[in-house]
Figure (cartoon, helix red, strand yellow):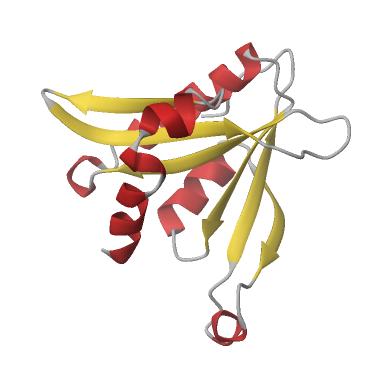
Amino acid sequence: QKFVSTCLQADLADITKSYLNARGSFWVAESGDQVVGIVGCLPVKDPPLGRKQLKLFRLSVSSQHRGQGIAKALVRTVLQFARDQGYSDVVLTTTIVHYSALALYQAMGFRKTDEYFTSTLSRLMSFSILCFTYSLHFDWEPRM
């Protein structure tokens, strides 16, 4: 609940300013008149030399609509947007406890590039942050 509150006061409070005016994008999945999923992306400010990277943010699907392919469709949308805009990679960070997201990213072809802990306590609790990269190719077809 604290995380959701923080998000609503930060980037999700003004999606146009946070994503659309910053050369990123933001998508909403709807079912009927309900928002059932969201995802955003922004250019990476200082990517590695020779790379043009887009970072995936805020992938979320309502608990009642999970397991229907909505998250996969949202990630595919980000990958296609990145390809269309000439990005070399899509990157993201997630936590070790987001099991279904980890499985999805790996099944779609993202590869783990880093793992770190934010504090001694997080290390003691084995609560790590994982970094993933999806390298785009011109003959690209998303997995799954």
